Image 1 (cartoon, rainbow over the protein chains, first blue to last red):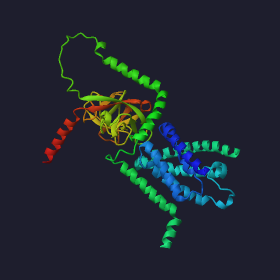
Image 2 (tube, rainbow over the protein chains, first blue to last red):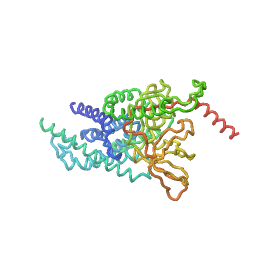
Image 3 (tube, rainbow over the protein chains, first blue to last red):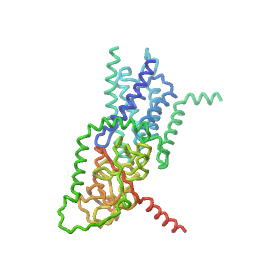
Image 4 (cartoon, each protein chain N blue to C red):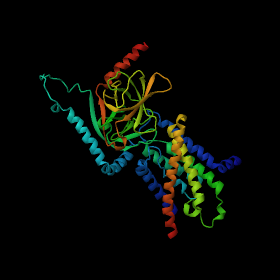
Length: 171
Length: 279
């Protein structure tokens, strides 16, 4: 029950941060962080696929409504959800953990979480920015934006994860 | 049948991907249609009002920059006052029926939301159809051209800014008869490209680029920016001119929407031309 509440709160807070704060943070017109994907990254492992896809879609749509890009973030988030399913099924054996594991930095360890966040955010940003530009002639500038934005997003994800990680340890 | 069901549930992630991805792609492509319903964007009532609340807070942070640009504008207006000119000519009184002949009217509006860094950027303002704004009107800021009205709701409208791949404002270099469309290549939100200017033109740096007055959206002579550099692309006969925008989109707070009172008349006339050619 508390997990549901935490995830709902996380949804609202991340969407608000993305729409009202991060949208205005840009370095040299090149990169922009998309921290809201952290919500999809941190959904518990036992989330059924239909719910995962629905929530990812909903999150993307919420961001879209505020950005005048109807369907763009939703499409990228759907891709993100699929990559998450594949990545988790390849790398995680659920029997190895005693209590219910969560895809967070504190529980899964730095190495796993780093690759998890890196690969997922690269996929998300790649589809997001390419769908936005929608032409092949600008591919080089788009790719550099993908990489820079991913690094920026990754930094923010780690900062917020470290903050939450300490809270959980104290309990 | 059971096998089919087993197959679907085994690869359910893939099917879910296809379903949701195609839904969002359809929405994305439908969204590009200019005639689409204006319900799902920031000119929507609820989202517009949330944004105007947040903007009330943000406004204080930018007060000094906005003050500067307003002071600048006051300066230019003062310079245009009759009282600031030395007058040595005979005064000729002329009565003009101005009330019925004003061609351009300006509606002031406040920016409540904007994007700058996307490939296609939009601005939302707190004036809408209730205040007389219609789709396709021109929008200028205190320094120069901003964009074109794109969608209108009762109290808000969204503007397709110059920083959008579909915005092509016809502009010319002040003092020359040549004109061409202005294109943003998506890199730097301060720089746009003016194309289709013949290359025999001897251009100076910092020459003013202004609206051409062709079409019905902008009056002629409104500043867009200044020439940064020019060059011929690939041996063609046209110049590609980099233009530094006069409008600072980062500090944009107040805009003016231009209403052209003669727009309908001009459009009707041009429509008649087309029809008579077809006959």
